[in-house]
Figure 1: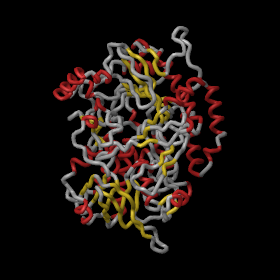
Figure 2: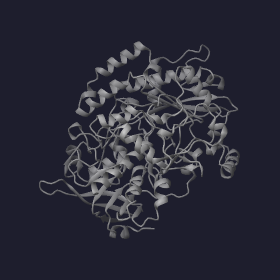
Figure 3: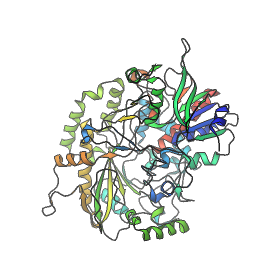
Figure 4: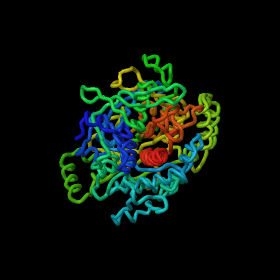
Length: 606
């Protein structure tokens, strides 16, 4: 195992801050050249055996565990009853790719093209993202005949990779009602989409997950990119290393030079100085924190904490996140769900089945998705009213960046081919927020309602000059009321879904939100749903945008080569550079960004 002293005495070409989703992918690619030496500093540890991470059916159980999760929370959010919202981020080798719910989906073609439209040449779907999304993955079609013959699953070889580091496969266990859920969506006018990887994700689908079917374990940055390359002498990972500051020099009339960085391990402080570049891959919350601690950020923020400004940039602004509502409902009592694993006898039986045959509940995951456009969510008149409200909102045009983003969003909102709400069918009682208690003897499913294109914007900033203090996370959830209206529309849609065959015959009974009156079948009013949303809404953990890749005049922090404006050799490669939220889960896109970044950096060295 590498010591801090040995790490600091190594002559590195590149040092990457963060051994997570992007950092390890980038490190693996850069170290393919045996003449280049790459160092990775990770604040967490390398957890080799942790079922809550590796076993698919235990997804989500590691959230909040301090061994693998920073377990951040937002500041109080006024629009959601002043609640602080849980905001986990991966800590340790693999980062958030070792912590998430395994969803390995793609957005629509237009989401990726928007990155280029916001001022980033050659960052589009056709020429860039599709290429690197395919490069990342080994897409494994199902081999179980029952799953392989499912009419909801398709596979288009033109859009998927076969030689990538990350394994993308299908759940080995499908819950009893996933097909009924999808067929009910079809009966509500939502088409079946057999392969969402082709740049069009609208419809009901069975999505791939980041699981290696050969071992039936999670495929994450640690197992996919680091472990196969850990024996490279030119790739050196140091864990338990908390970076506190990037060292910057300001030659007169020249770009700022990142000469080194400081980190702590245990009670000791160390300095390392790479020859070529320092690359920040610390994530949407901690990348801006490290930049600000180093003197790069908004002058007013830095001055408040006694930090000298070296570069005045809007670091930490433009924070966006996907919100979700867990729509919990009772289901037929004979249904198998992950909740049954709470019974020690069932857990023991399923563990045996998983270990011996790679089957059963523990080999399972999320299986059914629905991506819905506005036309499926609103009556025409209600949508026209919402559009007027959005058009009149001056906060959307307050800066050049927001003005350009809002122009794109206003085009997407009425587009029947662009998803605004995602539905995820979870076969268990999902509770991360202030939910009611399970009732014994009842069986539950949860349908997660996710708002895909938030109009609200927030920020992440340091709250002190102490590098070990958590950053101040303020997403300003529902500060734009249109975001709430989309969630209300999602609740009303799922309420209809509960009553649509064949899902209705699954024994569906609303639990949270409840029916207003079970005797009269009276429903909650829109105002009552809004009140319920404010009490229940939580994050689905997709923060992006705080070191946005955009032109500097538009509020960008990095340029299209991922270099921090005004610097010679400091880049950012992680989800913080994504300028606008995409209509899907970001895992695959973050890997693709790292793959492209490696080519950019290699070309710059050539």
